[in-house]
Image 1 (tube, rainbow, N blue to C red):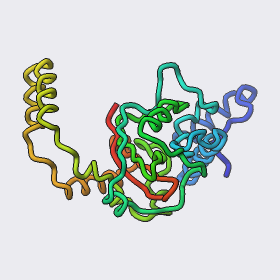
Image 2: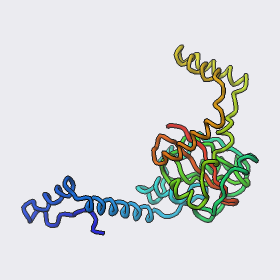
Image 3: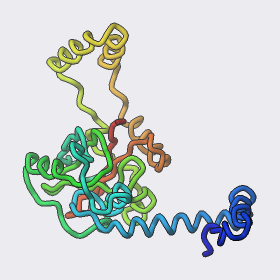
Image 4: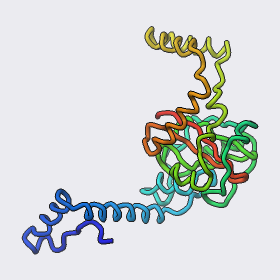
Length: 255
């Protein structure tokens, strides 16, 4: 693999190298473009390899590397937590029955068992950079699921399906059958909306009054999101329990 053209001796050859580089950029053959792309991918993979494995078992190795490719020490910016506004979701019997099972895709250490408070302390201690907002985070076998993919970063859907089969049925039950707000919650939502203005109030009222989305529609939407993998607008979050190997999916929220 030759890699992108690097013009040698540009200054001492009267600009000849500059024009070669320009030609390579704008008039490259298909083979030259393919060589350039292969070189860029190889260079990117080498940078990821230098980052090393995830220091915490609830973040997958590939995701950690992509989040911290320019931060190999895994330092955390002041006031920044990569994981925000999450909701812990103990998996249901339906989740356990539907979820595909695969060998652990990332790392070997298990997240420790504990209560939801214990898990929150772990999440709050997450080092490094990156960002995921509002994920529904599965708790399986009394352990945090390991986040493998988040909003276009981490192990790809294709890589995960290669070891665990299709992910079409891995969506968490809480996504398929989202809970409706209680009467008390509805009052609080309406009171908050009223402070935001009439147009927002009407939008919230529409959301509260409309019938729930049929589960089959939600599942079809999840399948479409899997097909769009790599598009950051899909907001996919994919997890694996490192104890039993089950794989779970949910959505995160736009930041």
